[in-house]
Image (cartoon, rainbow, N blue to C red; front, top):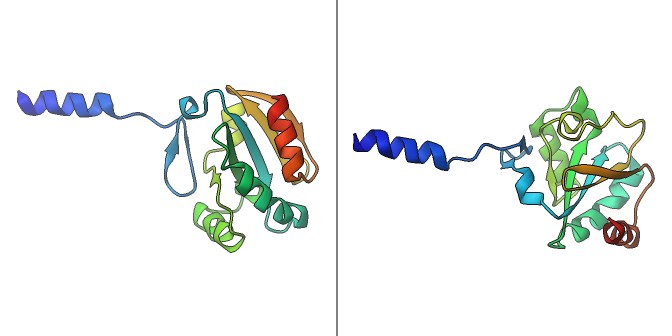
Length: 144
């Protein structure tokens, strides 16, 4: 009886992730409540994307902001392992989704990269399809 009770408590304490990252960890929408999320759709073959990485790394340090990436080629050809290798190559320090962001936030496949979605409390507030600077990221975060 004790084993059944213990198993029930363990199962109840386990939280189910709302989405997965390429490093194998999971995330919950509750973890990002009241934060501004910059969902950055990027590619390793996109020079403006590469220029943005340090800015996203920096803004991700703000406790009220989270940067989440998604490689454009994950929609059809790249595995999580390949994405993680690219993240290491370009020193990308923010998390990268394994889960499809189209299903998480009801967004469309972007026509170009870089594309960054600004999300707050689960709602897409804006999308920009041009390279961002650290100053522009701060401005966008403060207006959402």
